Length: 118
Length: 118
Image (cartoon, rainbow over all chains, first blue to last red; front, side, top):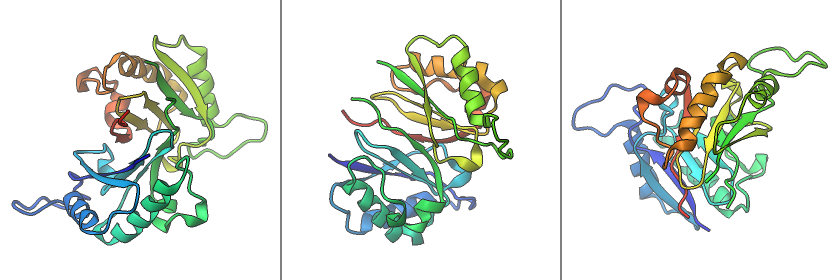
């Protein structure tokens, strides 16, 4: 089963938009795509995760697992995001033990949603 | 297809816990359950939607549709929550036209997550 890491590419993270320059969410997505992708994970761009006041934002989901949304992220968080996403992708139900979650996942959760029934 | 309205029953919404009295999330859940449930919707209690700093919180999800999480809700929002959830349950993809969403759904979105692939 494949886990998805959705990255909001329209997040401005409170920065003014500068014409011709990528917004913060696009920069985060580019940084995540440039790194090796963990096994069982797909990094997918999304236009707006509706977490605009807490951008940059990413979401993790997979069939049969809890989904999570994290916010207030930056490009410098990319390594930790991928570490946390790898643990999620390796989990059966999306519930990674608390201590194995990176600090940004422990402290910057915006929400989680229970698994969908098949 | 059945849509789920998940209600966090552990949200305290910034109120102090009073022994023997239900917390704000439980009161919201009880209020929602006491009202007629819209067609195609199931109201389900959840212990923690990880939106603790924005409680009370609810989530909407259904197979093949976008999921949504809303926060900063109260018992008095129950009628609007059910109206918005009914529109969601009647939608094909979870994307209810903006003008048909109740104000609390337009203004108090915490996050949304793209549909899962089958």
